[in-house]
Image (cartoon, rainbow, N blue to C red; front, side, top):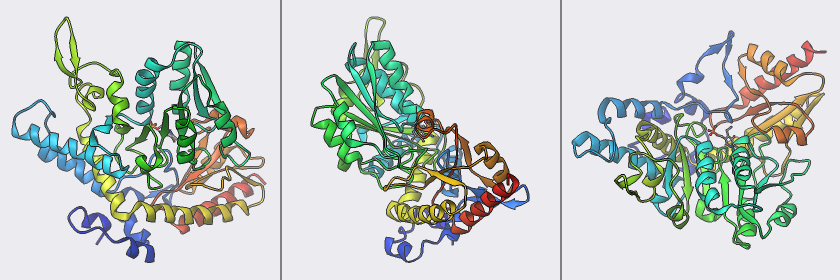
Length: 425
Ligand code: PMP
């Protein structure tokens, strides 16, 4: 029986059972897309940091929603509308539990991690950041956690401060601390870097910022699919992630915010759902979280997201993190042993992202040759151009692992890289 076939009614497989044998073949059977040939080879999908594949439990849940429950939410008194609302709100509760938020009202459905960051920059940021103030980020951020703050700073005449990273791709905490000044109004850092794989010490970062009453937004787009996340333990004020990188559907993401902060923030977009009453003279906004959810929301997205989070719970995030760490160690050993290969990002605390360059070969050529072998990796700047600049490369090749990847697939990657070297010898 596949893992999906047991979902969601049977008891979750215990952690001990998974530890004693994380059955990747059984898990792979839940992901139909993996079972195909590309250019005459078995597909090896190693582009999980860009987006991950969806288990049948997710696609089934979305189909079930449209075939059985679909109606617009919150506004209707009829049966289907009530059921759709229950489904949508169950997605919120699932996200709350998954990241251990204190209150389900602290979960806001957005389009993506990107929209979550823009929402905070455009509401909290516009309210609190003024001329001469500062926003602090790190040098390893994804463009999504740079540009919204840059736009805000430009509008307000504020300054974007950037905490540097070392040659391993780790945040230099002392520098970060020094940059937390009296004008710093918010700090925004990634939990896991998509370009380097670095896991940042978020708890410590939050403590340093909170000691100066500075709130912290954490970009968890790469963390939530890879490691257990507990926003209360981290202590952060805002946390964002995307459904599509978390084995869920595209078009939905989560913004977590501490209730008091969300409650005091102005709304983001205007429209239906986010109001409690409207007249031409005055509009009264709805309560959190609906205040931030203007218009008809992505109901099927919330349903799919819940199914994805249930799937992850079922496998256990500790098990997934442990398994991906084993894959990373195995891949790092094999890939770094290939002559001419340099790994970019060698942090002590790292998640399943392996960025590398091959001497004398452009990363795009690496990607193209690997594609001919059926191996999907990503090449380019990974929406982290400042990281590329820091390591003095234009681009890297990046293999990123997911819960369904196997050691055999890493062996295929290694054979592919050797082939690239032969072609360019
Ligand atoms: N932050 C990080 C670290 C990411 O890797 C990504 C996606 N590559 C994002 C933010 C943005 O995610 P999305 O495109 O889903 O909004």
